[in-house]
Amino acid sequence: MKLYSTLLTCTLFSIAFSANINAENNVTESTSPPSENNTETTSISPMDLASGKQLFARNCATCHGQKGQRPAFGRSAIINTLPAAQIVKALELRKAGIIKGPGNAAKSRLNEDQMKWIAEYIQTLKK
Image (cartoon, rainbow, N blue to C red; front, side):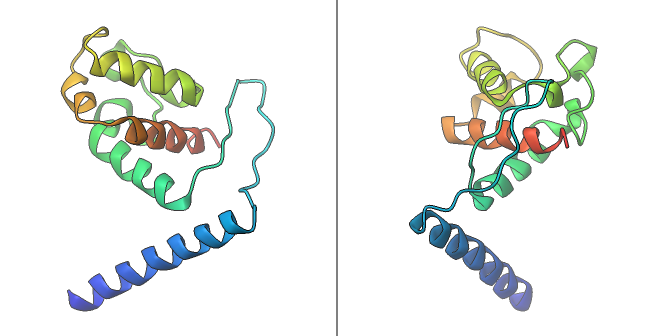
């Protein structure tokens, strides 16, 4: 267990360190131009993307599918087809209680950064 913990810590440190070096050298992640299906691309750190993946798995995947490929309870949009800004807006509206549904309890615990991380992770599911 201690070995696993040490390996995990080293991996996270190296990801954070490399992301920090890239930021200092003004290197951004390469992104392709938006495609016809309105795919948004932004620069996000590998750690934030990993956090988005983990948050998605815990809060979204059960209802939306592991790749965001199905409508939750047959009523929502297929989220892996939506641009990041639209996903963030929907999460904000759910958190505020403006959009009501079974997923509101999970969404109410998310902060603004976590919503962005999830939305950016979902963009990777389109590829």
